[in-house]
Image (tube, rainbow, N blue to C red; front, side):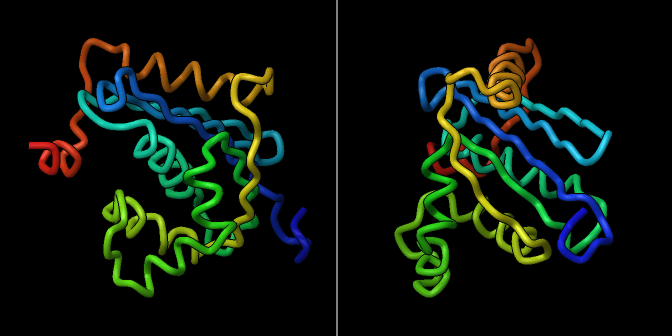
Length: 159
């Protein structure tokens, strides 16, 4: 249970990957809450690994069905974890997103982050952590599918 004694803590494991970077990419998510476990993934024709790392967190937070949840995020992305833990995100907001990569995703992330009590934990990738390994496998399998989605904003910016 969380510190309020009402709902269990949600563990959100995430990973993103891109082949070529930029190239085909995907994300993988494992959500755990009590006895519940949910896995999600999706692949895209053209994107970057950092976009997929962040999108994995966004998709995981979007899947939470109540507000003010206590969420422990586990990610091997220093880009995502440091952006929040080191206060970079606050500086980007204060600068009105000037010279920020992936502002579309950060703007999508911010209200989700603010609607919960989220703590970010960095874990070393490819080090045998079961959920991180599963997320990596989901992300790689997602971009290996024959039918991939489009990361429209990234593709438009890349033209």
